[in-house]
Length: 238
Ligand code: DC
Image 1 (cartoon, rainbow, N blue to C red):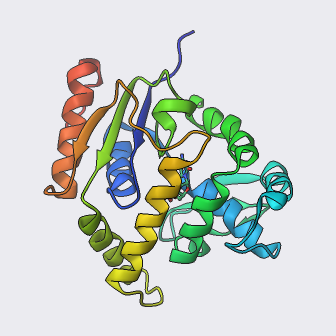
Image 2: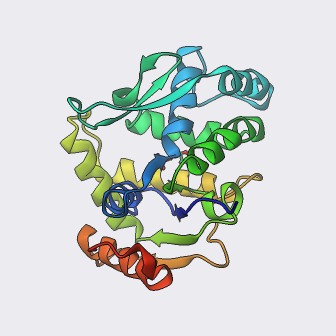
């Protein structure tokens, strides 16, 4: 039997991956998997265990063990916002994950090779259970190099900072200045792009979309159009 239908969407922070992939998932009835939330959950567990951004190579084995032992479960809860919740070791950690501190820690733990291998099988399993759309940094290159269709989203750094600031404001997070967030995103891009294992890269066969000057709905239309062009049998009203 061939693989189920998998859409891979990669790109740096703030390119709109989460909002776009959620909408595409609804339109095409795909399971939506935000792989960044798994790295964020490992960052959360590592922080709970007493590690901070200054952890060193000598700590890699301990943080890898945390990732290997963790039980992850996505649950859909209609009465919550967001509806898709991530439970780790039985606890709903969803609202703890999207803070600037957790973003930095997630980027740092994601560079540990053992953490990446601990999460690889899980991500493949999530994608293979049903037609799905996965968003992250290495979906088209490492997790699903055989994906049905791949996209790589980009946007200028200032536009990405603007979008993240709006997202943080909407969730009532602690205030952070444009400059500070810009520096954090720049550092995260640098770390994610230059790490030794599974760095952020556009897969050779990915369709690149620069979202800087486009609204969310326009990007959703562009992606839907490309999916329907390649898989006309989908026949959804996109
Ligand atoms: O998508 P996000 O911003 O929530 O991801 C948080 C961090 O997790 C990101 O800076 C790098 C890491 N990540 C990764 O290395 N590979 C993925 N597939 C997804 C996220």
